[in-house]
Image 1 (tube, rainbow, N blue to C red):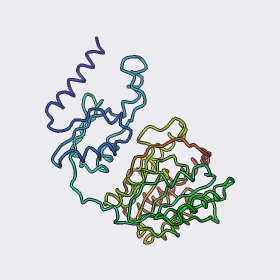
Image 2 (cartoon, rainbow, N blue to C red):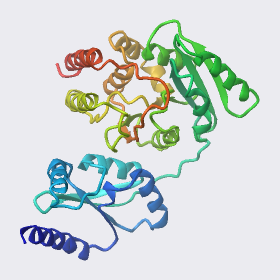
Image 3 (cartoon, one colour):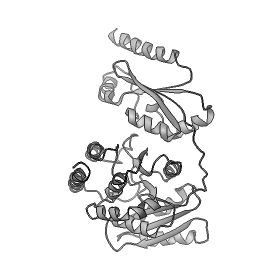
Length: 367
């Protein structure tokens, strides 16, 4: 009886909101859609510029309670869901070409309701900017041949730059085999061996060799879909941001994509760096990023300075972007399990390095 009364009150509250709304109602689709950005972009093509949309979704702070309710049989078992906070949904709406009008909480904060409308913006011409895609690769022999075919076509032209880093397998040989396939094609593919060690050094070398207007970083482990690179291009080319950072912590991950302690650590450091840097970072260590080459050239001295203290390379870029007031935009990406090879991350060693980077950031930006 109590359960039915609760459900009835909850649904009556939402029905009242829906009844008074003139537009498209998206009832709890956030939890179910695999790629919310693509869904909203497609929706935007089907409605006119004056159509309002209303999105209702469960407040992520209720996640433990609702999961427990499902286990106790007090709520239908709905399986794996997307649990997004207000900022996640508003960010995806903006990335999809909508502007947020208002957001409110309903029924004791259980449900969040966001109203938005299409934002008028200049249509991107795909041929506007050239793109250099830097791909650091160490012990990724089983992944190399699948990378280039998976990268969508966007931009005036693309060049793909592999940086191989002292692999113990056939990575270098397979890279060169792939290069020969594209020798006379429209895609420019080059490869270099790094003298130094680590991803930060590999990306730095890739940047030095790059000639495109836009610089992108894509990890050779393919744990993020190469198809998502088009989103990064659209975001930076349209002026949504100057520095585009991927976020793996919005959508649910595949089971073994990231260990639980690593996930907890990433979420914790996301909160720490958001506070220290003054811009929202949900995921500071996602390997997929994009920025303007002219910004890197302009601010190269700071980038090189931060590289001396950054073993990852991600923070050198982030700190440079923050120092020079570049607008940061995060793009949610699905994080997948590796199908070949193993991670180079040592959770405790790299966790200590993250603590060191947080302290350095504090003294750099908070004092």
